[in-house]
Image 1 (cartoon, one colour):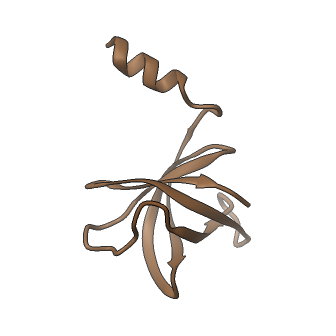
Image 2 (cartoon, rainbow, N blue to C red; image 1 turned 120 degrees about the horizontal axis):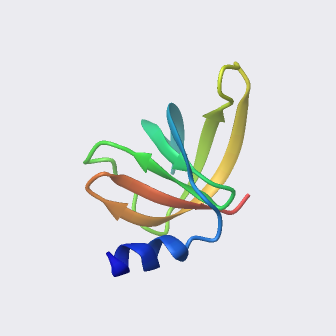
Image 3 (tube, helix red, strand yellow; image 1 turned 30 degrees about the vertical axis):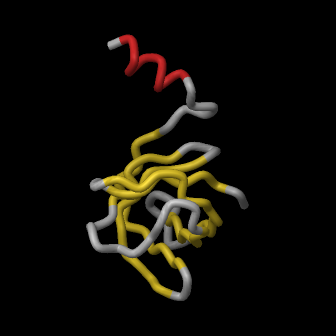
Length: 92
């Protein structure tokens, strides 16, 4: 329990659940994934295994506004890759 609490406190911005389908582009390849959660500083994307996105890669993410047809484009750097998806830190 202590470790879990300590890890949560390391986040600079609070995360919000999102659960929306998004498009990610990395090195001219496009992937469909689910934006699990998001904050001002980053996000976690659930993506199927075998995706070819490595830690340190730069990606473009198209994020739809909830309930609208408008999108926000973010550029991120992949900070973590695990069996469930990728962690991303927004850089622009």
